[in-house]
Structures are given as structure tokens and as C-alpha cells.
Image (cartoon, rainbow, N blue to C red; front, top):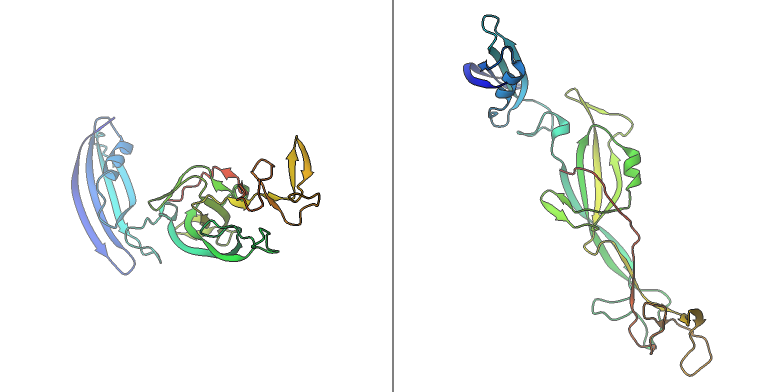
Amino acid sequence: MAVIQTRLIERSKSDDMNVSSIRANYLVECSVPMDEAGAKAAIAAKPVPTNYWIWKLESKSRKENPLWVDVDVEYQIPNIPGLAPGDDPNPLLRASTLSSSYDESMDAYFQDSDGKFVINSANDRFENFPLRRNGNLLLQITKNFASFPAVAYDQIKFTRNQSAVTIKGTTYAAGTLLFLPATVVEANETHPENNYHFFVTTFRLLADHEKHLHKIDDRGYNEYVNGELKPILATGSATPLTSPWPLNGAGKKKPLPSDAPEIIIFTPYALAEWGIDFS
């Protein structure tokens, strides 16, 4: 099946307060009789006028010559509140919108920006860690969907992206985004617009180039000796420690209380494949 040629028969344009329309009638010659589907596909593939969308596409084979098909096409700029020129009138085909802010917090820290551990002059920890300002980039992506799979979204809440994710041209490496609970406008019902039903869904993703890992210095009151856990004694004494001793990351004490401990890294958030199109 193939289209041999198309011929523009008539074209007109009309404008009123509600809509701007362009109507065109084509005569399409096909290689097989009554190929209305092929004829419509050929017309649908033609360039669409700027900011217009195909609103109606109808066809009818000619009785006197079934190889010829009349195709009527109507392009429109629909008058839908909030619809910008070039936006698809089908809300399910519109691109997502992106906004960003910073999620600020006050976090305890054990090591300063120069690498110095937060301990007193006698190598003891303070009773409480001091606090410092912190913050992560918070991305908010809003997009229309035909459904809101609440159970699926609940299963991936507070997980990190297992694969790289691209949002509006920016690629975020695996593990750098944290999926916060998704929200939906009027979650108990769908939204009618232009005879479509959809859910306006907002995703919140917290970005962290350090991959949302938690770190702390390795210090303690005990160490492993020949596979047994034993209390660390103060140097030259049989007295148990009154403050934690730096450890080597494998359960053994460092030689001196002033030695830098190893850093233990924890992974509080699992990786998961989200399977969401944020475009």
C-alpha cells in the first residue's frame, strides 16, 4: 500500500474569539482501492502550521474511482485557559514543568571543612556535635498522567535513582537523586479537560552530589583482639576509657588517641529503578 500523489484542492482560514482554524481539502491518489488509512497518514505527515495542531482528520473514498480519497483536515489553535501557543491540546502529551529551590537544614558535623575532627584539646568528643548549615537542591517536576499509581510510588519513596536521570537537559548520575513522596492534585478524582482525564502529578527529587551517604568518624570504647571484643584501656593503665578512642575501620584501635580515625560510610537509602518519564 502506498500513496502515489496528494493534491491540495481547497484551503481556508477563520478566526473568532474562541479559536483560530485552518481547513484544507486534499485529493489523495493511492495504489490500492479505498486506502483511507494510508491517505490520512499521508496528510497527517505534512508540516503543520506553526502553533497549530491537527484537530480533525476525515477521509472518504470516491465511488467513481476508489483509488482516489478525499481527505479533510482541520488545524486549530484551541482556546484553553493556560494553554500557551504550541502546547498540545491533549494534556497527556504536554511537556513537564520544572521548578527548583533549596531544602535547608542544620546538621551535626564531626569534621570541619579543613578536615579537622570536632574534638577538644584532650582528644575527647564534645557532649554534643556542633551544627552547621546544609542544604540540597530540591527539584519539583509537574506532569500530567492518565493514572496515579499510588502503590508503585509508595514503594519507591525515599530511594535513590539506580540509573542516571535526565531532566530538562541536565543528567543526574546514579544515586544522586532521592525520591520524596509524590503528590497529585485532587488525588481522589480525575481532572476533565478537553474531554481528557488526567492527574496533575508533582514529583519532588532531592539532589546530592555525594549520593545521600552518611559519614561518621570511627571511634569507640572497645576493639577486637584475636576475634574477641575487649574494652580499650587507657595507655599504661588498666582503667577503661572515659572518651572514645580512634579506630582503624576494622575494629582495632589506632596507636595514639590523637590519631585520625577512619571514616565509616553508611547508605541509608536503597537504590531503585523508578521507571518514570520526567520529560
